[in-house]
Amino acid sequence: MSDIIIFGINLLSSLFMLTIGSGVLLIIYFYFSDIKQNKHAIRHNYPVIGRFRYILEKQGEFFRQYFFAMDREEMPFNRAERSWVYKAAKNVDRTIAFGSTRNLDTAGTIMFMNCAFPTLEEDAVAPSPITIGENCQRPYTTSSIFNISGMSFGAISKPAVQALSHGAHLAGCWMNTGEGGLSPYHLEGKADLVFQIGTAKYGVRGEDGNLSEEKLRNIAAHPEVKMFEIKMSQGAKPGKGGILPGRKVTAEIAKIRGIPEGHDSISPNGHKEIRSAGDLLDMIAFIRQTTGKPVGFKAVIGSIDWFDGLLNEIEQRGKDSAPDFITIDSADGGTGAAPQPLMDYVGLPLKESLPLVVERLKKHNLKGKIKVIASGKLITPSKVAWAIALGADFVVSARGHMFALGCIQALQCNKDTCPTGITTHNKRLQQGLNVQDKTQRVANYNKYIHYGIGLLAHSCGVTNARDINKNHIRIVTENGLSVALDNLYENHH
Image (cartoon, rainbow, N blue to C red; front, side):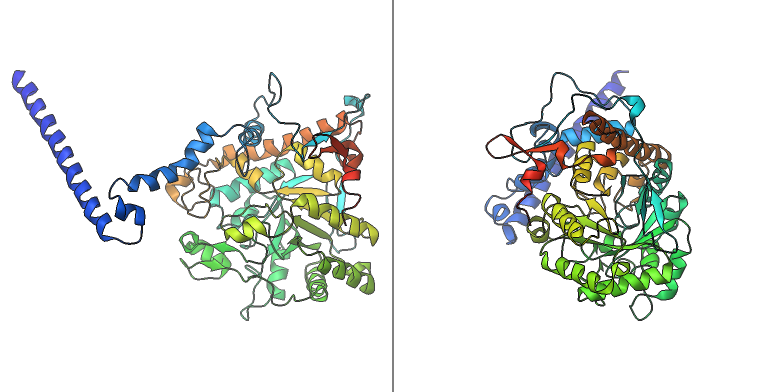
């Protein structure tokens, strides 16, 4: 027994000395490596120790998220917002105690005006159905206010698409395919789909690079595809096309998109066929005639002059030339990869662009003809109800549904290293995303968004969530006092 103990002590001692020796050799290697390199001044001037700067910088995101940021501080979504989505998706208690942590004095704070005589439960009604494309061969009617925004297969993983597709079907909402084309996984859940046509025309591009009439018909032949959306621009990168890093372009994704495997998928920054308002209406007419289904477009509103020109062009051609819907994306929208100057500084946020568009549609008597879809950081019932009050007919969200899938805001969407398996094609990481479980979470989240909108509507004294309007909301101004939402926008043109 003593021999075994002595042998064990000697072995542990040897391993300890080997570890120490290896550590010393590694430090010596790092020292000379840092001294000889000229790319990083900190590492050159402070060899070995300087490396900790980069380690700490990288870990800073983690520590801010879990230890140092307050519940309402974090960006782009704070812990309180994410926590509500997680609880709704998991179907657990969503109530809180001991008062709100939300600061009601901050400028821009939304406050709903409760009624002295709220709507009784027996008087409440479900959201009324709305028909998009009433004059199309195959119009689309839905009661769902809250729906899934565009996320391409490629930007998100196979199990993520599957869970969203099945979850959308279970919830009765629609799912936007994103610009990456139609995959079998979108169709798998039998959900209502909006096929997005990006600037690269993935899925509907002919050999000449132009929009293919034959491929459009093939896509439209799927009964699940209810509408077509022309993507002009998106919130995080107005004026820049979609970016899918080559590390995420697998053989399957390359086949669906019609691009080389392993190469960056960089979409053009605009449709070459659309250089004017008239060109946009021509493409809408072509797609609608080819498919027989409603057609609209998605855009970030910046300069409003082109939109005025579009409405004037519709007035000249007639209302039948108008798009069936417009998706307004906020400048603070999200994406897997975008240049920071575009993400931070280009385009109008939804609080400015949505009322601008709605008022112009009313002025031209087109609000009933053209349905308005709002997009951009609307992941809680209060934000969705706010958008409805400003004139949106529908709201779509991508990141809200990513949280429902389990996203932890790790900010690694563009690196193929997503720890929750949502935005990675790494099979090992995808194993953590159970499709059956996440399907139910997506449906739960959608259910409680609608339930929450109903709570706000009934508190304001209306029976139907779609009846929430500007009269039901006040906004806190810089002096800490609130003004009616109508008054806030009376000079906003």
